[in-house]
Image 1 (cartoon, one colour):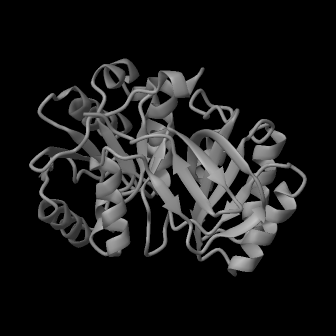
Image 2 (tube, one colour):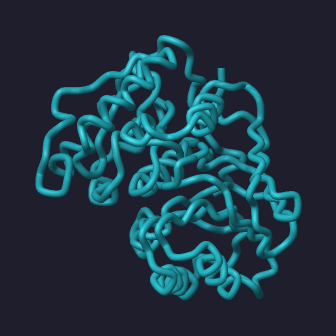
Image 3 (cartoon, one colour):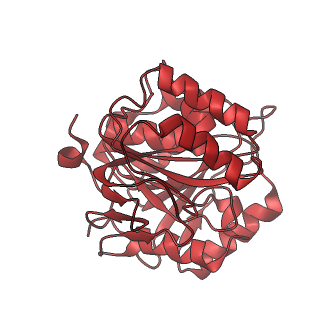
Length: 305
């Protein structure tokens, strides 16, 4: 599928717009949730917290059908302008079969989150062709820094193309390449291999980030993806944060050894993921990765009028 030619863009977010809050994965801390809601309100938006958002079923925020129903409901609701995830954790991939991808395609709107939400972002991007947003969850928005909040608002509201300068970038493999940006959390992507919701990585720029994974486990996941053919036709790789994954040097060494002979640009050091700064990165939108100049430049705005 030519995602560049067929991408569907959500409407731009404007002051006063309604943001529906969903919980596709784990239950969440109420205090952190409330702080994030306050951030949304102070930014000028109107969060909609549905009845049933706080349900629990063990380590899940309610049954698979319940969690999917909240997502389907907000996409079908014309009064809601965006859908934002409360938290990651675990569980998004369990509800993927229950989503109405045709309805999502017919009612395109902003969908944002990260971590375990990677499964939802990529499934919607590839099944519905909708550009989605790898960015803060509600529970992280309250305590992440101003750069995170500015990037989030800019990605969802600006009519300008998005340029991400990777200030602390580390060039592992030089070069320049253009492709559709996909990916997110490495662990989640690895678990999607062999499912109907595995992303198509051909000619894509792959974003990867993770938290709490030792270098040897990162190596194991990358090896599985490599053996499964995920990396055969990649355009490039950009690495987000790898929090509590050992030393930065050890993590970068894993990627250097894995991709050193791929002849594609590989850039580390993007502040996206579980760190204090979590820049918003559109998923399903074409961009040019320049590993030498340490930048990721998107072709256009991620939203439409």
